[in-house]
Length: 442
Ligand SMILES: Cc1cc2nc3c(=O)[nH]c(=O)nc-3n(C[C@H](O)[C@H](O)[C@H](O)COP(=O)(O)OP(=O)(O)OC[C@H]3O[C@@H](n4cnc5c(N)ncnc54)[C@H](O)[C@@H]3O)c2cc1C
Image 1 (tube, rainbow, N blue to C red):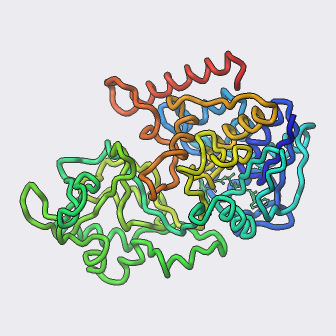
Image 2 (cartoon, protein in one colour; image 1 turned 90 degrees about the vertical axis):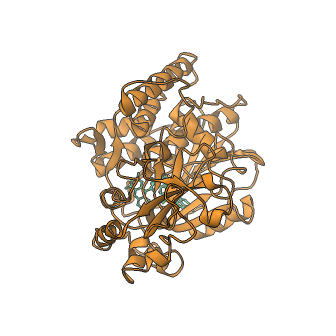
Image 3 (cartoon, helix red, strand yellow; image 1 turned 180 degrees about the horizontal axis):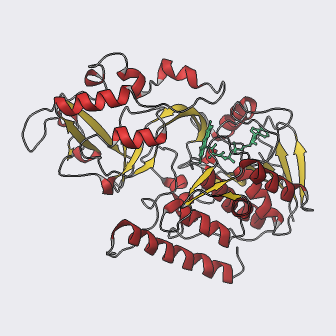
């Protein structure tokens, strides 16, 4: 049996270490706290929730709710802690963040198979026979980030400060939006355009410049965003027409139904070949999430759009994973090295923990010489791994929350709307997880 080391005791790292340990494999868990903290981490505990205390929906008809239930079937420590430290939050699963972190820290520290080593890891460990899982998160310390970049190759790591929201293509109103690329260059189907009249633009503009922005998290580099990648609301504040000459310029985009150019246009760019996801071009933003739904929901065609990922603004170190990582999160050219968590391009607390679970299971299997466990794309956990390994258009890989746009299609029509469809995805996914559990693999 080979030893396993996990680097980073955040959501992904704790779950990975737990999954390794529960398979009877010894694991060293490295964490740089308490000696060193990222700008967003405020406590010395493990699995610290750096912002909201909500793990989002707990309903299986919702993609992140389904992901939770799959994790429960796989004896997830993060889910056990969340269920034990739950606070009332309607259909969402919110936790007492201190109790949550305390519960996980206690379980990890008292597990005989896990040794905790408190120090910053500054280099990707050499290929020394051990199996390694790196789960150091979106704010990975600088030295390790440089070493990861060197290990993966020059363009292996992205650092972004601001990202635009992504909407579900199936929820756009195609009576309002139309396909066209500017001046007819390239594939028309790559862009969806939402045209605005002057009245619509004025109302949208007023809402945008007065909307509430999210709180900043310490000195995490967010302020530098104003130099390179300006949030749409900041650009808008420069003048009423700035957006009409920037990301909302209508020239070269006549509406094929009228032949005329609109007063302003919001362009949505295809995120995947199936056209199930579109990002709002140039709409990187720091607005609070409910404000994004309210203000961007005023864009003609997006009135009922479902946001698969909200725009965010913070430092986010993530790997350009397609072509570098496998669907189980190991490095294609170095299979004993796994990555897990937000740094692989999954987005969110639960998604990060789920990738830690999947990578941890396989790190343990590799350590004892077993074949990897490949989860089907009909499960949310498996679909997220598949997205990371191959998702998005090449060169345009974007971090992604759990959503039904990436899970294997149902291949049949389901009556009863979105909720019924979600329930059908869940029924199929949990059936798969139960089969895998019966085989003793999770
Ligand atoms: C400011 C901010 C706000 C966010 N808000 C939300 C939110 O509200 N909801 C949501 O779902 N997601 C949010 N996210 C995304 C969130 O980071 C992830 O969802 C989640 O915390 C990532 O889990 P992780 O395990 O990948 O990383 P983390 O939870 O960040 O864990 C990484 C761990 O590795 C340690 N570490 C880092 N470098 C080293 C090193 N070199 N050596 C040893 N240890 C190291 C860190 O101290 C940390 O404990 C936010 C992210 C940021 C940056």
